[in-house]
Image (tube, rainbow, N blue to C red; front, side, top):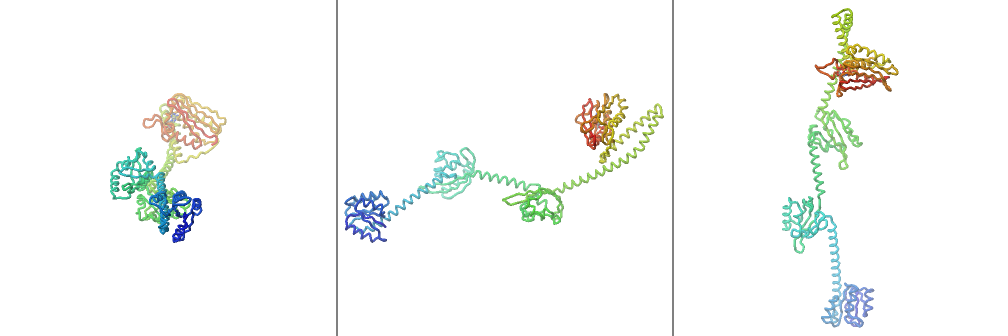
Length: 617
Ligand code: ADP
């Protein structure tokens, strides 16, 4: 401890020193009696306490006090004086002296020093405490002002303090809020009663702290969800509620969304007709739905947390089961499998499984949807059987037709030959009857041939036999076959050919049939005008075009007439004879020869059938 003693009287110095040396830790003492030395000592010696005489030759105690206070307002100054009246003493204390000691009572000096130092310490501590308080007050104020959390202080049901965070949440200004609004004005009507009750209980001292989630309304009327933390505090002997508000609308809404989608998922999962199963990467069943339990005839206890394959009989442990772990590791689980499986209870089912690899919390799972295809499979098998039977029937039919044709053709040939002979030998009425028999037999032969050709097509037995022939000659011959009929009907039947080379490589028999059928139809469906048969060519094809000025075909029947047995005029009232097979055969033959057929027609004006066939089939 350092003491600066300001004293000019030698005896007083001695007395003071004597007393002061009794202080513990033996203080370091410096003695001055002039203002200049005093100033210097203040700076260099840096005393902890000053003891100064009141009357000095060069300056006085009051001045020393003033200088000292200016230097350090906390430095204790004790006035040590021989004579001082009350007034001066009070003046000194007022001016900032810590204490005064009468020289007659010099023994008090050490106590005065101790006391002054104690006071100084206490003062410094008080100031420090005040500074700290102010600092923390500032800190909390800044925190409150900058917080996005709404902070409020409530007194007598009205807000007396709110921060910006609070204003931002509800959208009111501070003026609109302070002393005007209370919590009941901010919540939605349905929670008002509850909140009022709660506030009454708290202010009545029943509850101290609360944490509430409430539905509130902003100034604009928008509904929001808030979470409030608050407690009752005493401020100036009055009850206040201090609290924090957080806008949790986004959180609540997303929770509601999650709940909704969870509900949706659960509804789908539980009510799905398809069996669903989730297994982890080790093939352990994590979740199954009701449909799964029904399909595999098991209870949850039998499958959950167990290997997925336990629902199958060992005889059904296929590669999908034995290689499950490798497949899941390499992501090669097949997305769709159909399989015949035997269940644990030996029941056989045919199931379709659709797999999808999922990641949940970074873990791999396989989600599978099963569909029981047993019934469909049965149905498919029946269909396949029915188709095979139908094919067999068709084969039988072809055989039957081939046999029948032989049986019919033999007597028919006799009828044709002999009726022709009779036609030549007989006269008059008999000749006419023989002609009718001859023509009828020819028509019967034609019909028989058509049916046979068709049955060949049906049995897929048409194999083109390619030879080179003169297509002009062949076509002209066919045309000639119809000249008599055409002539009888008063039609002009013409043949034109502008081929550069008449020789083509094609199936002669099939081509003849195509030409015959088309010309036959043209003559059959034409009553006046002409039928033109034209042979022409383009790059790779020779083209047979049969034009007539007949009854024509409605446009919506263009495709229809190529179907077997189909005719524009059908049923009992049909106006034309024929089987409805001619164009079917033509189309099939054209296709067999890698060609194509086109039809253009207008009802009442006529039709044109055009066949394109490769010159070199
Ligand atoms: P069919 O002549 O034996 O009845 P097709 O298969 O040859 O059988 O012809 C089917 C139908 O197409 C005919 O019944 C007829 O209604 C129509 N048709 C075919 N060619 C012509 C044509 N040149 N003019 C008008 N109608 C035609």
